[in-house]
Image (cartoon, rainbow, N blue to C red; front, side, top):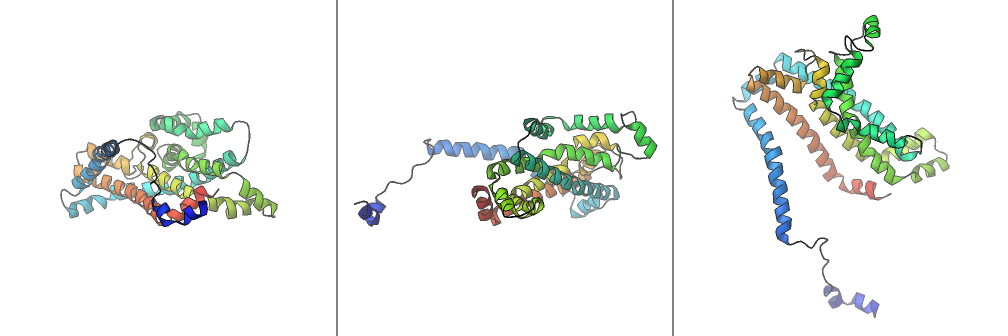
Amino acid sequence: MVLEASLNPATTLARPKRRPVTTEAPAVKWTLITIALLFLGFFLFLPLVAVFVEAFRNGAAMYWAAIVEPEALAAIRLTLLVAAISVPLNVVFGLAAAWAIAKFEFKGKALLITLIDLPFSVSPVIAGLVYILLFGAQGYFSPFLQGTGIQIVFALPGIVLATVFVTLPFVARELIPLMQEQGTGDEEAAISLGASGWKTFFRVTLPNVKWALLYGVLLCNARAMGEFGAVSVVSGRIRGETSTMPLQVEILYNEYAFSAAFAVASLLAFLALLTLGLKAFLEWRYAGDIASARGGH
């Protein structure tokens, strides 16, 4: 009878439709969607549109002139350089920390996780002040730095240190949950077949977490390019030398050069949108691979 029922088209068609997970009326669903869209439109979409409108208010020629101005170009180069240095450093740290937390048991694991999350709760300005206290003219390491001729604060190293601090959690926090969910089964199987530790890492662990790693890199890069607070403290805001794009926007705005300020701000916003757009494209293009990587373990 069960077999007949399963083969009977009438019985199959008569099966009830799958009920929705929630029992709220459609009006509740659309009300919540409307609230979310209005919130995003007012606090996210509208400001972004305003930035681009103000940037091109005086025409494309004025916009381009503001972008290719020497101090703006110096700020763009510095921003990209800082991101190019800080993101790989965070990738190395994130992989090491996630590997240790997910694959090993040791005393202090909870403390390590808490420390990774610390930049989320500490103001970036405080982070900048800490580096001033350590490496500034009156800092703890000032005698050593002066003796060796190394300059940290008001120079590229200080900006990189501050940026690494504020972007520290992004890669690690993308990797840790996935590595914990996957467990150690694949690595144990590879080692039992004679693979070395490094070979296991590059052939097994890294491919399993490549999408989470890519997301962490994209988010880390976006934050690195847009960081203001910590960089503002340690950079000294030397025009043409230690001013990143966010700092250059503030300098131009305070000088009432609104068109130039919005031009640089629009470029910064475009880079952030490009990063998130790349993330969305990869999610769409490789949706199957991402789902299998997350659900296949």
